[in-house]
Length: 107
Length: 122
Image 1 (cartoon, each protein chain N blue to C red):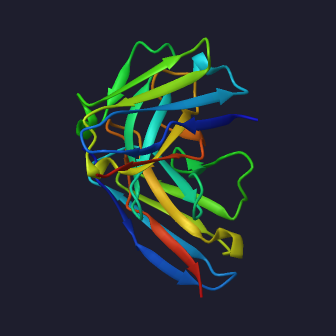
Image 2: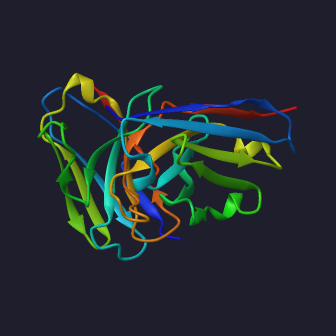
């Protein structure tokens, strides 16, 4: 199975800050990597697909990059409504696997 | 607007069975693979099973093989997860999710239901 390791597991930042989350795959997955946002008590929401493509309707302050085994997710200017847990997910191989999540809080 | 609505969750004893349903609307259901993802209380997301659009191909996580069965009824725009031999560590919210592309197995989930809570406890 492809293990997905996210870091950090949590972070606290101020409104307007740039926030970066890293996801590492245990083997090459090309760009078969998605990012999801999950707010408390809600279902996950797709933000980024194929490592760097913004899902329709998602604000442009969210972005993703990377390929192979190292991926980055960035919020360019943190907003109060971005408080959530963010997950990476690989779909290069079955079983599809998710990272452990990064909980983002406002300082 | 695409909608997915799970039902059938509840409390079940260890060793028991339960069937979850996912009712879909506002898209051509048979064109898309569908997936179950679960989330144990306070934990992360875990892929459980996927079924192709036609229903002819199914995929399972190792931890549910032989215990869970995924199926779909394209005439009723519904997907199911029949769970047997349930264990305490199957306790989770079970989300149904739609693949984002009309290929047999896309692996990107662009719409999710609100989830159904399954609690396995005596």
